[in-house]
Amino acid sequence: MSARTRTRHAHPVDSGMDTRLPWWAVALPAVAFAALLLLLTGPADAHADSGGSGPVSQVVELVRRTFAEAAP
Image 1: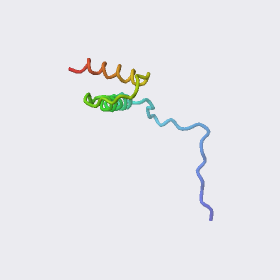
Image 2: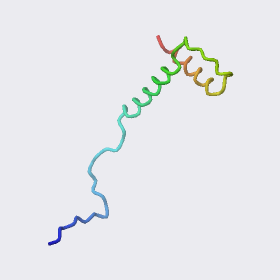
Image 3: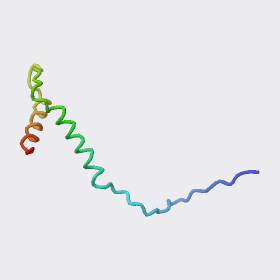
Image 4: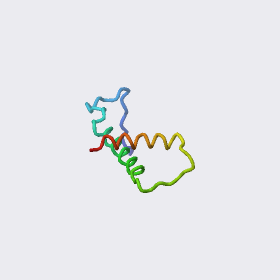
């Protein structure tokens, strides 16, 4: 006795679901990234001399200054 198999339709059935992301699906990762970046650059007492100021450290310093000016 063989089992019946379902046949797939050539066109998928529209389920009516919306495929757009909600606002928080983009905002939460962006906020989490900014918070982690602030934690990384936040400690002012830890001044380690890396032997120069490369482009990455300049960008991190610029972001840190931007957030420092925006904070109350």
